[in-house]
Image 1: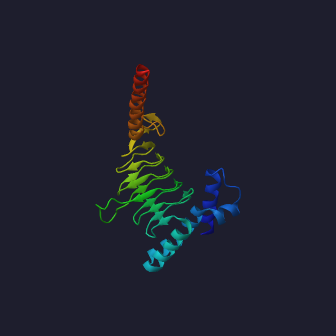
Image 2: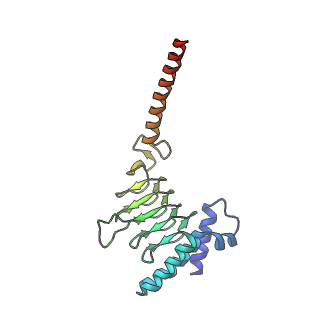
Image 3: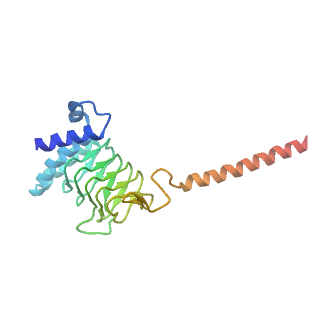
Amino acid sequence: MFRQLREDIACVKERDPAAHSTLEILFLYPGIKAVRMHRLAHKCYNKKLFFLARMISQRAAKKTGIEIHPGAQIGKRLFIDHGTGVVIGETAIIGDNVTIYQGVTLGGTGHHTGKRHPTIGNNVMIGSGAKVLGPFKIGDNTNIAAGAVVLEEIPPNSTAVGVPARVVKQNGKRVDDLDQIHIPDPIAMELCKMQIEIDKLNKRIEYMEKEKN
């Protein structure tokens, strides 16, 4: 248990440039606290102490804003950065060296029974606000962009973006014309069109006022 805790603290030091000391990470990082309490809850869950397991997980959620079902399986060196609003479902499986940012959901769609939540491979990064919904796998060494909604399996060594998410890079090569930053925003496009029309109307009004004078 202490070895796992040391690994958890070490992975935060490696991945978070804002981390200044071991004590800061141990006592003030909600992700560390949530993972630590989850491991205890998971042990209770495996011993069929479901009420106690749920009580521990709900206490962790109240303290950290991170809700991890006690049935979820978590690998080594999980780093939940910031963490507010993270939700991890009962049948989710998370590999080693995974980084999860705030607002991420590893959830279900309501259409499955048994295995309902995703399996996350090793060395995966899931950006803030991303939703991964369903009992499929996210391959090793994959990046899920912030705000993406993933509804189907993503192969290893990929970058997935968008709603619904699609692979734009695999094995270091582009497979789409998009990237994590330059994603067409339909709302912004419509606002841009409206602004163009407003500018045209303003020019027309100015012209009509000049004609009156």
